[in-house]
Image (tube, rainbow, N blue to C red; front, top):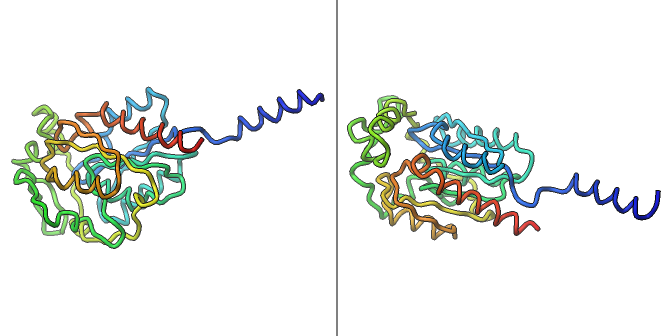
Length: 251
């Protein structure tokens, strides 16, 4: 074999084993009172762009259980991954995002506690809008109030979609909000935040403050707390930018 042939063979072998220049894997983590099906629009958009998208189905029984479900999905990824969380899912990705496969974090109107903090701590100094009411059951699980569900969670959806979401909501163990985090992945991973300016689950100032603290690149959009459904393209665009930015840094 000539020197040129050996060089060509070495280049081809290197190309086949080299890691991708940017993450092509995306893992989506839903929040409380919902399930992974709400990500369908984001999923369709990103898969059309060539991403491999996986969706976690959180049991919402505890922070540990949701983190375990997310890690299970991360274990299935074949390379660098953008980890995305909506609402309570932000707490989950903050804890789970230290996984070595995670290259970046995207918070979609999401919580982002620090290590040693609880989710509930994030509300200190802020007022939850009156439209967002949790009805805690005797067994310690909470549903959103049926009468105020659309106003508090999904004001920019149709009445039919809001009714389906209301009647298929997944309750969360309220004790999860009082669990202290062990890790804060945003301290070691680049972060992006998509903030819904008409969010009635969190005060807007709270969302902006959390994003500022973690040093996130922020995109704001006029939307309800259900922006992961109603603003799927905006969310997908931010995830795509995150992947491209991480990829540029990896070169």
